[in-house]
Amino acid sequence: MEPNPPAPHRALRALRHVLSATLLIAGIGFGVQAIRSTSHFESVNRESAVDPVVDPADVAMRRHDAVGIFATGDQPGERLIEVTADGVVKFSEISASGKSAPDVATYQIGRRHRHSCLTTKGRGTIEVLDIDTLEYYRDRYRRTK
Image (cartoon, rainbow, N blue to C red):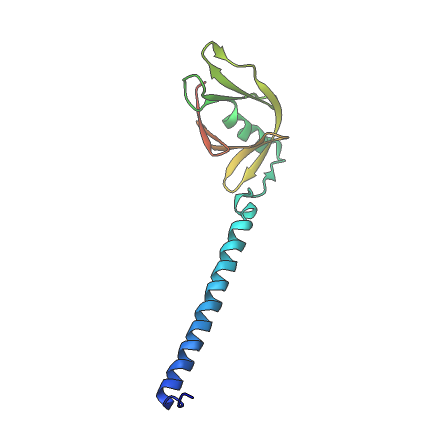
């Protein structure tokens, strides 16, 4: 049989067990937090609410700023957004032979944060950053006309 270790060794061994248990619990906690934060990503990508603009003068002013043709570039494969004054927005792409057939939707004028925006059914929200720039799904569109 082994003799009992001296008291300082027993205290050191107990301290090691406590530290090991603490590290194990902390590791499990960090792992749970990492899994939880990666599995709840939808709230990060959720867009903030759009406030509708109902004042006719405000709608007219915001629509005036948004009406025009905007593009991501001028090469084949770049995308176009055409906003008309009658509440229609047309999405198309520049092809080697010109423009592709547009996908047409209607829009409503709204406001998100400090910017005007155009809300469409099924096509998302177009943000009017300034009179010459739109943002649509994080792509910048510059006014061409």
